Image 1: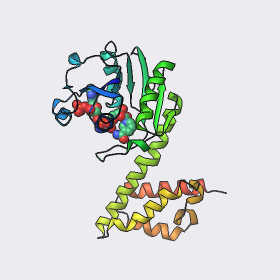
Image 2 (image 1 turned 135 degrees about the horizontal axis):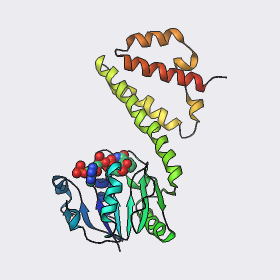
Image 3 (image 1 turned 60 degrees about the vertical axis):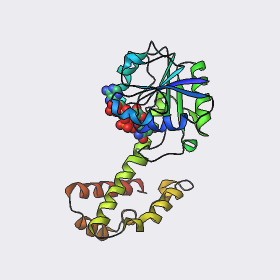
Image 4 (image 1 turned 90 degrees about the vertical axis):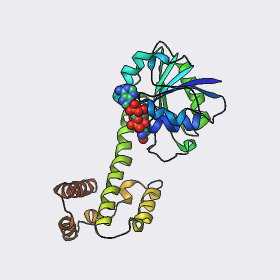
Length: 249
Ligand SMILES: NC(=O)c1ccc[n+]([C@@H]2O[C@H](COP(=O)([O-])OP(=O)(O)OC[C@H]3O[C@@H](n4cnc5c(N)ncnc54)[C@H](OP(=O)(O)O)[C@@H]3O)[C@@H](O)[C@H]2O)c1
């Protein structure tokens, strides 16, 4: 039985608690969160605490707190847990614990429940035995388990920001345009779905379409006139120029 203490009950921490509380061979021994009130929802799953001094030893501590808080937190609990793993995509392997690891789930977690079985888990550890421990855990909850170095993960996280965060901002802008013009955003769903499906089989460079690719300058000028803020116009120009530069002969 692998005994795990979960540190942090935010987006990632709460999804980890949900999946690990139903995983065979795993026992959540304690759940920590800085803000006490956010522990209420987890009281039926395991003992909870908002005091570092209350933490009890377990085989592994999984840290799912804000990136900037990870290093100081690990320093303060390093003597309690034999292995400490963080879940950040952008931070390197930490050095303060007895055995250090990374357990980075490459997915966008918000409030929506995620099927962990399909979440790529990117692992790293500072020794073989620790890697084996987190690999065994990862394989219990996901079919997609990868060994990724700190250097690779930095770039993976950067790529994920482009593929997810920036794309989502584009959806937000499209939603705003639809709302302002009494259009149902659902009308764009098949287009969004097709774009996401196509990228699995077609390189992005071949999948591109639209006025910037076609050099349809007058259409682009009309679009620019429809946009209301200087920031929106700047984004339109910048992305159109990037498309054209990518497709330069
Ligand atoms: N969300 C994602 O899509 C995603 C995906 C992969 C990896 N990650 C990584 O997972 C980790 C957690 O991200 P998240 O999205 O779950 O964050 P989140 O929902 O914003 O939750 C942040 C957590 O960090 C805690 N925290 C903030 N400042 C703290 C401090 N100074 N000391 C102790 N705890 C502190 C918060 O506690 P309070 O409740 O007290 O504020 C909360 O539990 C990050 O390393 C992130 O890079 C996130």
